[in-house]
Length: 264
Image (cartoon, rainbow, N blue to C red):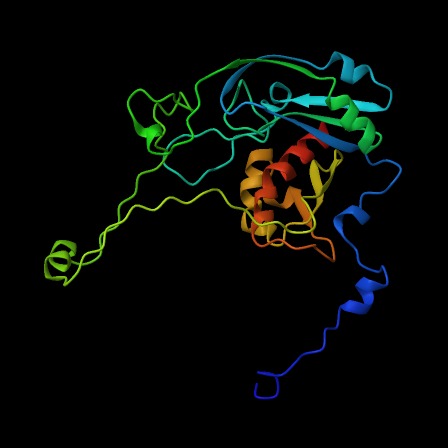
């Protein structure tokens, strides 16, 4: 170890990457049979979905299809969410949106440009509902409920007790009390999310390329949502990934969404 610690180490990957020999997720999907997806997202933080009219989008030349939450609800199960409340979380909004940007529909077309143009043709009618952005107000009695079947905005309540807390406070020389508020924050890797999914009907198997460093952390959750055994969801990671910082763990709903869309 003394030969390495405190000394400069020569990078070994630069030549391959700088000469264009890297293999990222976008390098894996450029085949003649690959469709390209565009996702329509909710502009509202809280609203009922009254109707979705994708007629114009479907009729556009080059569009392979449009999939909504109603189309997938019989083909996927809600994700396991790791809390005690029966929160139903799907890869597409079904009947209701609960945050700005929640996926509402996915368009698949011959190329990215056609998919994005078709996405703009989809007409969604919403009934807006009251929204709250202050977490303390969400637990008040008159707060609008996000998940009606839960009956409360408290999805999980846990308490931890270590040692004699009352005695520790009583014997402390000083007690510091303060209220902290943390804003939203996120990581920003150079490479965005990427998924290339293919359904093998002969073996009822999903073969998926995705740029998620550690997909097998939640592979069982994805397989459960797709209603297949774990060995029927094959996940393949590209040779190179343009950063993650943990944020690519949020890719799993899109792995399921693209997988089920490739089947339909």
